[in-house]
Image (cartoon, rainbow, N blue to C red; front, side):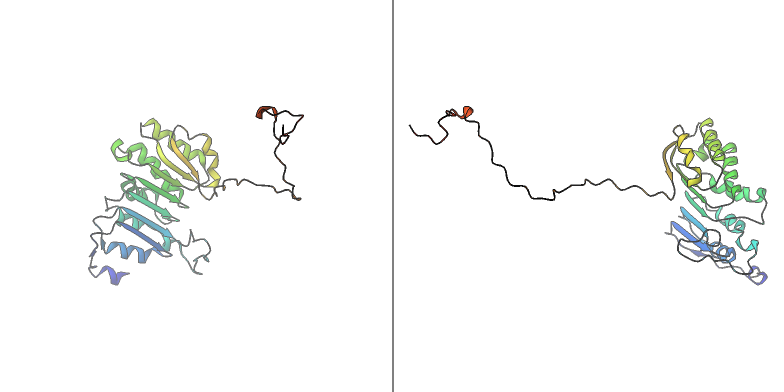
Length: 243
């Protein structure tokens, strides 16, 4: 990649683009794409590592000679942290395998502040630890906008500790919290922290339909009984008796 660094990359401005989704199996092309884009109105970003988080129904994209550094998204995150207009961030399978916790903290700390929606799907656990640290150290104004959080991990106690930290700092309740089935137990503890709790991957039950049963044999129609007394007739004479 030395030949690329020797050339000044030409930047392209997309003034009306607000949403950017990048899927990759190697972070190098993703980095050079983001590095050459100038997106002044960018508000929504999704990074998707198809190797660690493949799409349903598609074969996994794992090269035979894959190296961990190929999927390290540290450089991509460093470029994105310059976009202060981002309010929705989705990371699917993103990892920073060869980067230290301190190195990753800087770009994620900048990205997490001011977000309205954050999704960490099958990402490194250090990403959620950085969210916890950001909530602990950042100002109230930088955190109060976050309303929707989606996370998949296996330690529900870590998420519960984060929710308690938000409440201790006086932050508003989350509008929506989405978790995987491994953390479904959180539904019993989130009433004070979350307005809407959702378990990812669950299928909503269809409303029960009314079942009507039909008699196997046809019934003969019944004639209506007539109360002769209420009609002012003599029951002994009958309704057709003539005087």
